[in-house]
Amino acid sequence: MTDRQITCCFTGHRSSKLPWRGNERDPRCLRLKNDIANAVRAVYESGFRHFICGMALGCDTFFAEAVIDLRLDFPDITLEAAIPCEGQDKSWDSGDKARYDRILASCDEITLVSRSYSPGCMQRRNEYMVSRSSLVIAVFNGSSGGTFNTLRLACRQGLEIVEIEP
Image (cartoon, rainbow, N blue to C red; front, side, top):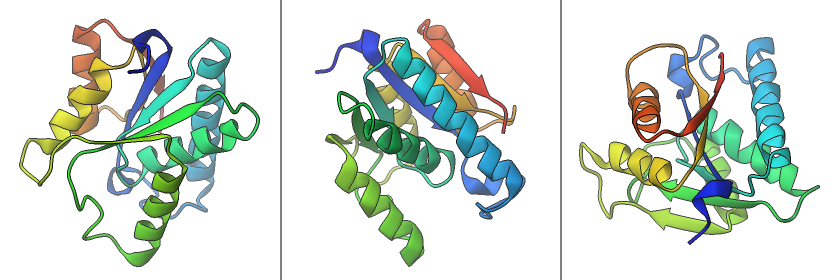
């Protein structure tokens, strides 16, 4: 098990909650990806080496790709995929599935939190990530949902939070 003091997890909105939806060429999306990459680099420079991603579409994908890119310069970085349930990507389009598979192939560790989908499996995945981390990078627009719940849990557990405006 990786030391919690050097572990950072991520929470953020899916593409549908972002103003540009799935258009990753939108300048606001490009800025957000840059902000995520800068945050990952900053927490790496402060001593974090293990990163956990929940593997959802949108911000989770941007986070995982930023960690993978940074690892090219710093090979001591490890990336863990916390998958909420088998078949997380089963209803995704072929492009999103291919991207998911590329990210999984780059992970050092894959944790399957639940065997099958249930109404609470996404929350259990978030609890898993928070319980193993001391810092959370969050892309949060103030809306209710999984990101809000994860941040509330992180606050209750005393984790440091780096918040990025979408």
